[in-house]
Amino acid sequence: MKITYIQLILTAVSVVLLGACTDGEQAGSEKEKTGIKQAKQDQYDDPTLPFDQRLKKYIEGKLSTRPNEDYRLKIYEEHLNDDGKTDMIITVNRLENAIKTAEEKNLVTKSATVGFFGNHNHMFYYSSITNKFLGPYTMSSTPQRQLTITFENISSENHKDIIVDFPIRNSQFRRIYLMIDDTPNYAFQWKQYDGWGTDKLEAYCFEYGKGTYSETKDIIIKKATMKNIGKEDNYDTAEQEITCTDQLVKRFFFNAPDRKYYTPN
Image (cartoon, rainbow, N blue to C red; front, side, top):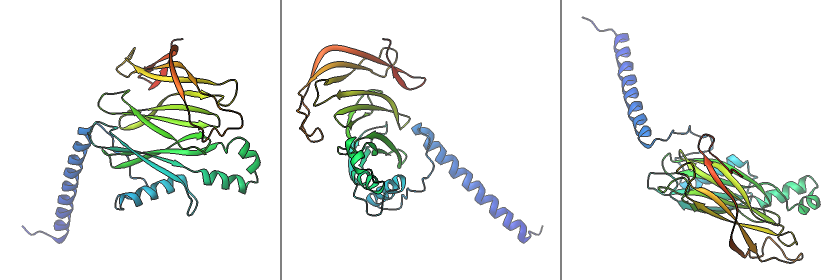
């Protein structure tokens, strides 16, 4: 039997397609083992670059930064999924951009009275499982102070969850992101203190206890005392001195279906 040129081409294409399918099935199996869905390749993420250049390109692309913008960046390393490898939380503070934007709009004086409040503090996540970035997760805040990141075992004992503290003038708030399916999930927010430098100062402490309705820990808010400052003091640079008490304010439980915290009272 004669084999034509067309038949040879069709045979070769079939072999290539079969090989591609087999490779795809093997790659899919690896993804299934981790239980994590692979994110699509982002236009701003280039894995072929050295990591510092790759991170810079991703952040500046996602935030549409100004040419040569002087933003402040911090990297925190922690185990945030179940693969046993170190992951990263990256914070970006854009104070310079906040001031320049106000200048361009002739709103410097007005903006300064509210501490240049806006979307100037951001968080990004780098996953060791997917080798990809997620974010930005933006905290509307006053950019004279950067985000503060800490970690706690809340949703699992196998990995940490993310605690973000962010300022709004003379107050500060705490936002909790639970790491679910290798993704930061915004689950809770409560003030840490408010009215600093006034006679209406209030402060709170946070504890994490056994879950009422799930394995995810409850969030327990207790009254705190805080050393006050004078009206002439700078609350962006003053040192915070908070002392916890045993006075219960509220206890929040995690509701798995919508991945949020609620309180029965």
